[in-house]
Length: 400
View: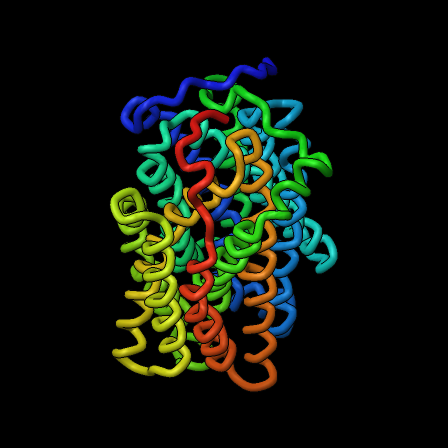
């Protein structure tokens, strides 16, 4: 039922059930995209594509996510945030199942676009639901729970690939994830709670208000850096380890999966740090350290490379709760869904699309290490932008 009534924000403990289920929806959407990275060496061989084409696949996903996030407000304004979250996970399942039998590159790219579209629909409604249902004092912790989904996806995607590819093709693994998403959609349709209020229609006036804020564009740049350090790097890391470090695919995916385990608690820990010390200092410090680690991945070899591969995800995972809390403070409560649709979508187009495409291109003309090093230099500049970030105007306003 569509309602304009805003929920009464409650404590983190009281909203834990809703928060955890939304995090599960996010996990499914994220692993539906993340699993292509660990499988990419297999996909390259099966489809006969180049490193550049492989990197461009992630740009296709990012383009779909951009469209989904930009137009998510159009959907949530009509079917509430709950309806949008339901549409997102159902579309994901319907897009993954056909991989079991499709061969055409064009059809594969269409499905990749739809997978990105599903992910794009999720984020604005998820953030708007959490910040609408939870009191601002607990945003960092609640968003920390939600942001455990990307590192959990980054952990399980390569491990699932390493284990199940011994018995199943990459196509069947993708179809299986799609079936789980469809089952979740059925459960959510019958008993899902939270988000029973509409998003703000992204009309030109609302968009202009958000786009006119310099802090919005700063957040886009900061998100792009962090997304490049997570999704962008993760997408191409298996190819880098297999083709330039000489690792066997199973060992590379196991290493990548285990390295992401720290993100499961660092995302929540990052939210607690942000609640205690503030979002700006947390964002600046974590980006600088993550940039240094990303840079070193492109330069180091042997045991030291493995050490940095384990350290980098812990820092990047801790970034996002502070960043999403900050993004929710640069516009009035009634425009948070607009902010959270435009900023991450634009940033992911860069960090999750253009950056892996660039790394794939450098891997084809020279080395993957060159593209990874350039990414590290890009991220290191992030702390300078936080100086100009203005978060003070809406930090005490509750509601949706």
